Image 1: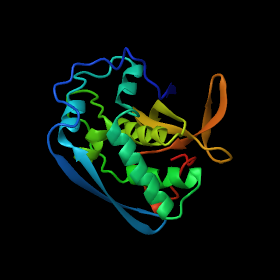
Image 2: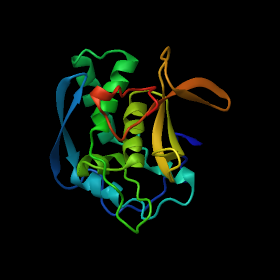
Image 3: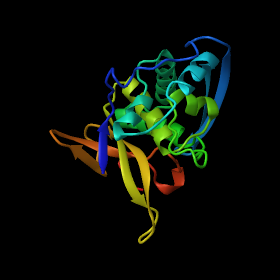
Image 4: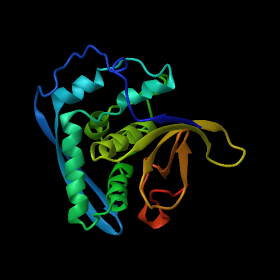
Length: 219
């Protein structure tokens, strides 16, 4: 298992963007999902120039595992706005604890459609605004989105790359997920060298109320 702490060095952040953040038109993106047998919806206003800026930010990925960290965004204004909208929706729905808010937001991310990378182009991670704008992405995309939102809200997260099997004896394949620190929680977790805090499993690619999904559940 390869575990990467969700932080990024200035060297990795260098780029030569084509589109300016905040330029172009704003568009309303609507999302609906279910959590704990209740239906929810949010409207997010996203900027086209900001979307194109990040979509064109990195042309090639990924030569090293650390390259995936370039797609975790905690400093952009839009991700802070998205985080606050979802945090407020969680509180309004009565999910006020750290765990309650984290699972509420995980259910939102988990219902964004899973979309594979284009064939023959290798791994093509998306920045959070790309996943939201296009309403789709694969495991590293939804993991980058969830980690970005939760880090913006003050949570400690870890971006995880690992090899998995869909069934015993099956082929091994790459997967990405998030570990999130929730004090006094229980469930499946891992720790880091030099860090005894438990980071609980958070599967970001799917959410199903009826299947016992949640933070700290090994799927």
